[in-house]
Structures are given as C-alpha cells and as structure tokens.
Length: 456
Image 1 (tube, rainbow, N blue to C red):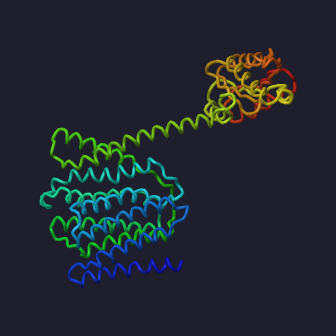
Image 2: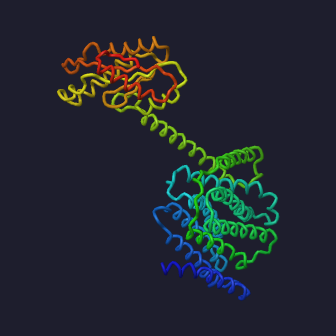
Image 3: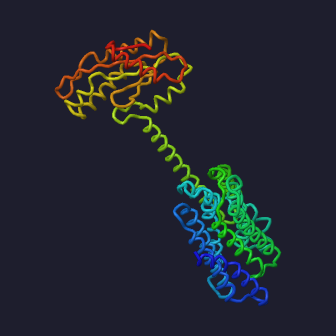
C-alpha cells in the first residue's frame, strides 16, 4: 500500500521534472525524451496493474493493454527522433498509438460495470467503432488537409485520425459515465480524456502550421492525460444506473461509411489513397462476423428459452410455460384443466422409475392426441398435467371427459399390462388470477369423490 502511494505521488514529480528539463535544455535531450518520458508511462501502467482485482479484471486488463500499446508507440517514436531507424518506424509507432483506442473503448466504460463478462460482440463493437469509424471519417478529411502536409498521405492520415478517434472515445465513454457515475472517478476520467483529446488536436494544429517541435510542452499533455485516467481508477464512483452497451447508431454509421467509401472508390478510383481500403474492408468484415455471431447468440438464447419452458421427459411445455400463458388467458373464453394421475405411485414402486417414465411419456401422447389443435398441454411436475383450452363450457367439459377417457384402457409396456386413471379439475375462465389454485382444489375434489372430472 505504501509503495502504491509513493508511485502515485511520484507521477506529478516525474512529469514536472520532464517538463522542466524540456523547457530549460533548449533542445530535446535523449535521456529526458527517451528514458524519463517513457518511464512515466511505465509507472502509470504499473499503477493500473496494481489496481487489479477480480471485480474489475476486464477493465484493468483492457486499460493496461491500451496504455502499454501507447507506450510502445511512444518509445519507438522517441528513439526514431534521435537515431536513424527504419523508414517505417513512425508508421509502426502510429499503429501502436492507434491500437490504444479499441482497448480503451473496452476498458474505460467498464469502470462503471466491472462484473459484466466480456463478450466477442463487445470486442468487435470496440474494433468497428475505434478503428473503423475513426479511420473512415479521417479518409473524408484527408483531401482538405493534405496540402498542409506537403502531400504526405500517411502523416496526414494519422494526424487526423487520432483527434477523430478521441472524439469517438469521448462519445462512447462520455455517454456511459454521464448517466452512471458521479464523484472523483468520473471527474478524473473526464479530465484525462479531455486533456488527451486537446493534446491530439493541438498536435494536429501545430503539424498543419508547421510549428510542432519534438519535446515541446504538448508532449507533456499526453503524459498528464494518461496519469489522470490512471488516477481515476483509484477513486470510487457512485453507480447510478446499469451500463448500456455501445450505441448501435455508431455501429450503423461506421458500416454505412465503409460501404459508401467503397462505392466512391469504385466510381472514382484514386480519389482516396489505397491504404484507406484496408480499414474499410476490415470494418465490413468485422461487421459481417459480428452479425454472424449475433445471430448465433440470438438463436442460442431462443433455444435456451424454449428449453427453460419445456419438460425434459415428455417434451411438453412445463409449469413456467403454462403460468406464462395463463397471464394472457384472462380475457378469453375457455377453461383450465388440472390433471393428476391415479395409481401412478404404485407403478413406480413395483416396476421402477424407468417404466414410470415410459408411462408418463405415453400418457402425454394420449392426452396430446385427444386435445384440439389450439389447446396447450403442459406437464407441471411428477404425474400432474395442466391444459388450457378455449371455447364455451360445453366444449371444454367435452375435452375434459375425452382426456379422462384416454386412460380408460391399459398400457402395454415391455409385456406388462398397466392400468392407470386420472382425476381432472375443470375451472371455467372468469378472468381471475387464481385459476391454478381453484383448478387444484377441483382436481382434489374429483379425486376424493372418484368422479373423474369435477367442474368448480
């Protein structure tokens, strides 16, 4: 705990030290820009990891990965400013910077709902919005800004892309926190994201006007922003409502822009640089895979709901399904029938549960064949069944008597002749909420009097 406090206290000191050295040295110093600057990023990542617990596992891991990726980009960019690296080193650094956003989009909104599990759809949503939307919007802004970068397409793309990605981050995270969190956590987080965005826009402005200088004050803005975001994790937020998923409108815009961009490229080849096609095609592929996974999950959920309302032994609807149907049956003509088998327990005792299960399955088959097509037959548990049947009193009583008659002849199972009966309680629907209770009473009355069907 003491070590964590020392690390937290050291952050502003290290940032201030970097700022002072940068201001008074006159020109960038390697030990300041390579070692000290990136050491600050390392300390922030360590503090984030120290905040790890099972309750906020996904948020912490995602944010730590985001900051680490940004740190790799910073390290490569710093080294390339002092030493001759590969001509592609800055592209690699900017790619690491850009990969910061998908993980930030996964982790930062989760601070308000840490217990929720991470789904594949959430990862794809973050990728589509974080990389896809920011890259695509940037593509439409390249033409106006390109002359300011002396025609350097790659520099123009990344310089515009980062501020656009920041606006996407503000939109997604801001929407989540404005409705959910109050207090120091949201204050530090909001301030950190705003400072990060301001630094990116300030960098873009200086780059457009040719005034950016490596090691200048704007470089400290990113450190301050990352430190503020990291500090937010050490403060408790007051959760005011449940977390909502990513706004589907943003996903729709991202996919729509991708399709529009491909259409423009097809109609006017060469209007956009060729490398813009990579995030465009990747966005559409991610959207396709997302739709496929979403359909599979929806189908699985539908099957789970069906299974949750189905009796495993007979394949009939279960008690939950019957109760659900009763809730919408109150304003219809019809009746609820409750059926309880007579003499079933001795069959289980003398022939075993396996034969008992076969009897229940065959009983369910006989009941099903005797019912009208619009009736609902459910197994409520054990040897008890329920039926919702529509129609007038005479019709529903005929159905009850027909059900009773289905068990008037024996079952022949594995050479054994088995006799079984049924007692039925009949309650005409009058719109009341206690049909099941009254049908239960009527069924026991039929059983006591041995009359087969009792209409309550």
